[in-house]
Image: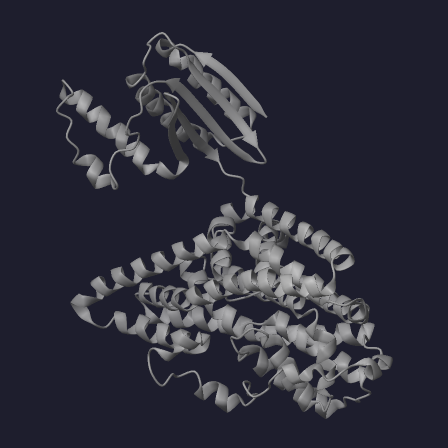
Length: 554
């Protein structure tokens, strides 16, 4: 949708009124309309100051494309410095000796400060002696979701076409050279930044609590809820498996020894080793290994210590907050590449998955999907019963973020988008989500619990292994510990599953069934894990009266 108007330079009020009416027609909020009007007025002054012909008319175009609303203003004139200085301070310190009166100087400074403060919404260029300014009124709130969805659909279509028409050798070469490489580069970039993000986020959060009892109370509620949902996830997965009973025993004869590709040496199901391993031997190793439990321990320790060092406390808090903002900004920059990474990841899954394996996996995959949906229902019940919240706004507002997390296929990588959803969509206080989200990405793995239970029991059924009451209790304990202490390495789900299969006396050849679709399963696990983290954040925020109900219900 587009609207266009030409106005004389002496009669810009008609143009401003035209824009105001158009924005109201496009459904823009009154507050945002007023902000845009202020910007338009100042931009028009700038354009008139540098116009070549005072009689030439200003062109105003109001556009709405795929949810994005923007205003284009253009007038012929010489190129000029549209926004002055790199900072607000430089704008305030600028020289204006060419202006005649103090009032003119004051008006110019106010104008430049306003433009500088809204620099991200403004784009200026001079093309063929035509000054062009674009003012973004409203970004498409679902732009990332739309791009990710298009990437997902395109990847499936292109992957199937390549599977049918391109020789397998060429597909393998393309997958190894291009698709897998790009996906690995993206995930490596996210893993590179996750450690600092978790560390500084939690350290800043803890240091903000003037009363450590408050921090302990909130942290206790978060951990208690995470333990509750982990148990509920295990019980839900068991119920879904007993209802659907996936796993055809005839598949056992078709499976090859693909388990050699999976090593179980990196995982321990000893609760003692898990607890002992929380405390690192040195300060640097947790960052190098991306060991989330150790990073959380260091962050909490430093956050508490920051309150106890007297006059240096404020300085270090400012440094930590600056570092937190820095790494969050880097992550926002990386997240823009999610559609590309999603495309490459899905194409790779399609190319690597053979039809026999795909058909064999459908029943298990379907059961896993039912388990995820059942767990979403559990979250909604918890929101209503414990949190006294209507789950509909939550599902409506968080569903676009769920698709982004699905494309990331990593709970740790999704920390930033989950934090953004908590603050900007759901109205959760930073005091809550800056602790609950990084902590949940490490210890709250409900999707992983569902995955381990369903695939562990399904593969046991395939190989005719009878799981009695004692084995089931042992399996529940192992799943609980594995979900908390899962290694932060590619293929962590497969590694944990191989440990569980070994404990259940199921041949590791069963891993061959799962390997082909593990990337897709990883996406579903990450989505469920993140959903649990945000649900906990909502309930704890409501109990602590740190939830903006107006924003949540809007």
